[in-house]
Structures are given as C-alpha cells and as structure tokens.
Length: 299
Length: 313
Image 1 (cartoon, each protein chain N blue to C red):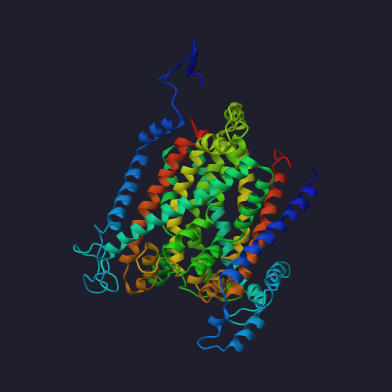
Image 2: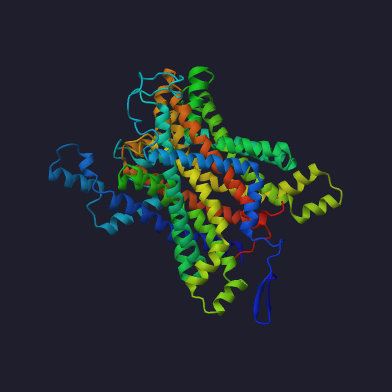
C-alpha cells in the first residue's frame, strides 16, 4: 500500500503513473498483443453471428430446401447443400449458435461449481476439505465419457442434457486449482486484516480472496469453452447431441457417410467454423494467461 | 516418513474413493436409469417374464445388495454377463485388451518421443520464430476435432489413396501390423499438439531455474544444459504425466477403435453404449476407475522417489 498515505487524518491516494493494478497491466499487455486482439475480434464476430442467428435474423429458414440434394459449393451456396438440399452454410450458422451456447453455459456451470467447492474446501480445511477432496477424487476417477453417457441417458437427449453433461464433467480441474490457490491466500496479511476489522468468513472468502484468484477463473473459462465445443462432436457421434437442429458435431458425424460419395463440403464447413472459434479461444486463453498469471511476468 | 507407510496410506485412501466410484455407478445405472427389463424384453412382456428377468439380472435384490454387488465386482473383476451378447464380461475384456494395446502402446510411445523431441528443440529456440511457429501449429492442430482427423485420414489415406487398410483386424503378431498403422498415425497427429505444448511448458519451467543460470555462468554449452540439466529435471513431471496416462492405453481409444473396427476395449465400450448394455458399461467404468486410481498412487510414489525435494506428508 505504498501509494496510500495518511496525512493529518486525511487520506491521500497518490495515483502515480508507475503503479498499475494487475488487471490494468493485463489489459495493456493484451492490447499490445496483435494475435490476442485479432483473436478477440474473431470471437466477437462469432458471438455476433450467434446472436443474429438466435434472434432469427440469420439462417432462420435453414430447414428449407434451397437446391438439389448434395449440390457442390457454388456462388449461390458457398458450402453447397446437404442430403435434403438444405444450405450447409445456414446449417453451420445454426451450429454456431448452438456451439456458442454450449461453450458459455458449460464453461459457466463448471467454473461456478469448481470455484464454489474449491474455495470452500481450501478456505475451511479440515473435514469440509476432506469431503470435497474425496468427492472430486471420486468424480475424476470415473472416466468422463461414462459420466457423459450416463447423464444423457438419464436426462434424455437434447441441448439441455448436453449442457449439464459437459458442465458436470469438467469442473474438477477448476476446483483443484482454486482450492490450492485459496489455501495459499487464506493466511496472507490482507485476509488477516479483513478478519481483524470483523469481516465474516463469507466476506473474506468471496470479497477478498476470490478477486485475487480471478485469473484462474478467466483462464479456465476460455479453456473449458473450447473443450466443450470439441466434446460436443464426440457426443454427436454417439448420437447424444442436440436432436432437432444441426450442430457442428452432427454435421461432422453426418459426413462419415458422405465422404465416400465425394461429398466433402459439409465436413469442411463444420470443421472450418469450429476451427475459427476454437483457435481464437485458444489464442485468447494463452494471451490472457500470459498477461494475468503473475508467475509468468517478465518471461 | 517412511516410503512404505506412505504407500500403505495412499492405498488405504483408495478404499473410500472406490466406494464413492461404485456409489456413482450404482446411482446412475441402478437407481436413476430405471427398469431395463421393459427395453430388454421387447414389445409386450408379461409381468411374470419381467419379474423373472429382474431376478436373473439381480435387480430384484434390495438396493444395498445391488450396491455391494458393484463393490464386489471391483475386487473380483467378475462383472456377470453382457445383456447384448450374453457372454461373460470378464472374458470379453480379456480378449479386448490385446488389440487395444497393439494400437495404443506404439502410438503412445511414438507420440511421446516425438513430442519431447520437438519440445526440446522449441525450448532451445525459445522466443524465436521457430518456437512461435511450432506453438502456433500445435494450437492449430488442437483446434480441429479428433473425429475430423479420423474421418479424413480414413477417407484420404485408406479409401482414396489406398496406402493403408480401411478397417479390420487380424490376430497374431505380424498379421495385425497393417491394420494398426493408420490408427497409430492418427493417434500421433491428434496427441502431438497438446503434448508438445505440455512438454514445452515443462522445459521452460526448468530453463529459468537458478541452476541453469549457474551452469551457463560456468560456461556449459547450451546443448549440454538442455540435455543434461533441463531434460533430467524435466523428467519428473514428464514421468508422472506418462504414468497417469497408462490406464487410458489399456482402455484404448473409443473413436479410433470403432472407426477402424479394431476389436479392442474401446470398441467394446462403444458398442455397449449403442446397445444400452449396462453391465458392460458398468464393468468398463469400474475397470477404468480402478486402473486410474492405482496409477495415480503409482504416479505419486514415483514422484516422491525420483524427486528428493518432495517431502512426504
């Protein structure tokens, strides 16, 4: 706190040019990183496409027959048509909406569960910690794919099941990381100070400690986001993905029968769309990690 | 603390975890998934038929006994019979293990050697163009779904160009080789991206350590530093990373095996999933959980043995 001075009972805060907060520093670093800026723009474009599709301004009539079955890419339909003569581009746009929603919802579910359990385990220690550690050790011992299948079997097939299945299987890493960080932080001076002025456990944990480990949440969010989009493909292959709309996974899965007939455009369209967002999210994640992780500073 | 006491303690801790795993399996497949007899008996089962089948499957027992059956199977590896094929599951698993290993072991060894070599090279040129290019290519490789690699590889290299077998398998030593080449190649391509990134981080973590600076100050050459100092210390995370992946090798690769019709455990699992063959799914879950748990203990023990800095707690 060397930028705060108390003079004659008056609080004077010296906002010198040199002392930047971690977040300010991170933001400045990110702006200088060209790859990060471009990736961020790409992510925004995808988000925009997803919103336009969700509101019906784009690809609203994706289910309409627009040409003959399996017509190859042309000026009219740049990614050709599928078996029912539907535009592959429109399907990929609907897929964008689905993929973005899967990414956001799943990553949010796992970050919330992981942070909540991890923070409580790390902060309270003792029996609470033991139970939560037992819980996530148990959970991580069961292969993800089995849990995914079991959850979709129980909930039935559909988007909701995909959200929950992917969200409930990917929180363990976040939980483990957050628990470790909270243990490192909980005896630090700023937490003791908060405790001395009468801060409750809740306040100390969620108002004081969590903002200090916010970078873990952001980094893992970007990681979970793109992993979820990739995992949806596996679910689609198992026939457990969205049922009444085209997801990228379903498009890729469909193409396993099309390739032998020389129909490659559905595979290429879905792969390209997925490639763009996953690559962008990967690069954004890397850049955010480089900018936010204090351990990497100066390397 | 003595290493043996440590091992015993870690093994003892497996018991609550194993009970927990069995509880999850029990809850998912015996409680929530519902009565399977209606599905198994087809359209119009009589109440008597259903009751008989329930008895045969052991799901008319009290819940506690059904749970204990799962716990017992984790120790005896007796999983009963498959609903779909009526075969003894333990013998199905025995038959499936070898084909899985013929793909996974060479693929894993190749991928690991390749990834470590590339990461050493990249660590040598850290911060330079080669480093950035390799990392970028890795991220690009990781941005494509593994299903796409399999579909495209099978179509382009086997179906279109005819370099490899499209699918199939043959028992016996030299006979299986032509069938596993393409699956191995695809496995290596899929795993090289994430692996290189992991190993690169491990190498870079070491390269900024003080002992490296000391070695450099003493005039040790950069290559010597990399191979003798960095690699040796990096072996600790590398070894643990490799060991924890061994159980997944036994399980095989779900997608690769099913696409190339390799009769391994991954293929068996996928078939069971498609047929709602609960006993096989449960068996594979128990088996992989046990393997994962045992190898995580092995990892920790190896970790403490090879790294004198780690203190037992």
